[in-house]
Image (tube, rainbow, N blue to C red; front, side, top):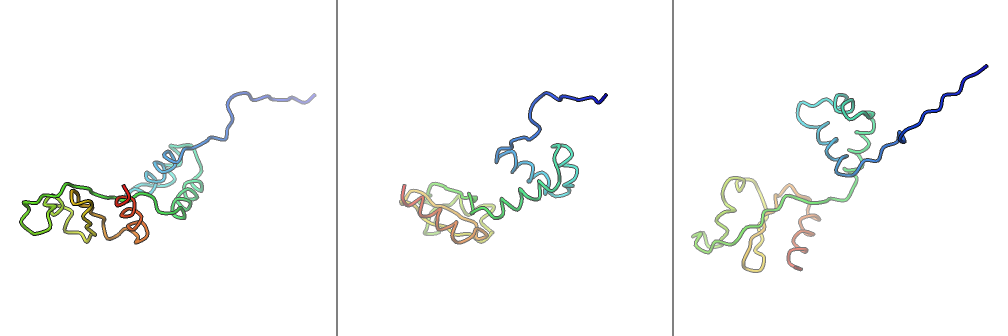
Length: 125
């Protein structure tokens, strides 16, 4: 006589939020990380991590690092924004005065269409 096993419990197929996916992909491709180890900790296949990475790379550009700082008229260099010229200012960037009261600094490594979208959104506020 044959036996039948009935397995009860939650569905095996899990639903991952975009935040969870991004966190797992970031952990898997962090310096010194091993994708197989991250996959094992998250209890998923390594191929799923590579698929998520591909999906995020194919997705339209999202948010970029943007620094908005108040204009410092006493800066002395003629264009204000004294706080913007410290630290990461040595990196190439695009600076835009917004409304005369703020400067926006967008790193030059950002794709041009994303930089244009950021500026358009800020000017439209």
